[in-house]
Length: 253
Image (cartoon, one colour):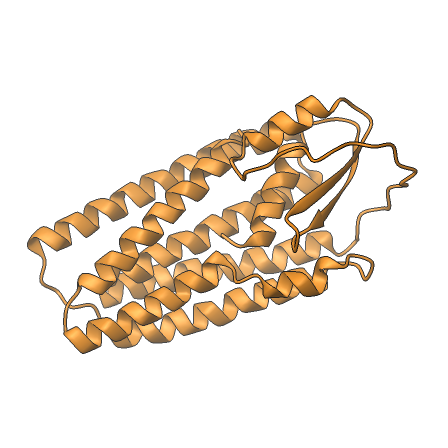
């Protein structure tokens, strides 16, 4: 999952705490500014539970006045949700057709992002308890699918000799990379001009784009060595990343 996804996880986690007026993210310096009227301990504990390496740098009084939420927030979340959900279906279908566990694993990573954006969208107008329940089942679903993926990797490593279609791996992964880049651009454009990290956030290479590049490389190696091992390797790596992301979602529940 990418930096905007981590930002959404943090927003959903802190949504359960009252008297938090606004959140300001500095992605370049990996800092979060929380404007609130409560003790710092509940905020620190909530952030630490996400395992993102958070620590309190300090606290001070502020004359900050919260601004109203952007009217385009819901529209933006719907757009990135549709993009990720569509490519989940495309990559899953093509992965099964091409016998590529790398594509199937990448589709689950797209599903993970779609779930995060979907939960964020729900959080805009949904109640907290319902959001927690959906987070719980979404996390379990991802873990279950990833475990099935690991089982498929093991089965194919021990008993299967089918060579995945490297052409499909490369073409679909290039399209998925473009889709992820588009999502990142949409998210960056949603930032207000006063948020200085808007340009800096473009420097960050999202996990999704790295994964897409990995599947492309795996497809090339499958062609060069005429071996399914590169596909099995990238599939295993992505399944592990999906489980890691699912554990973070479960921490919201």
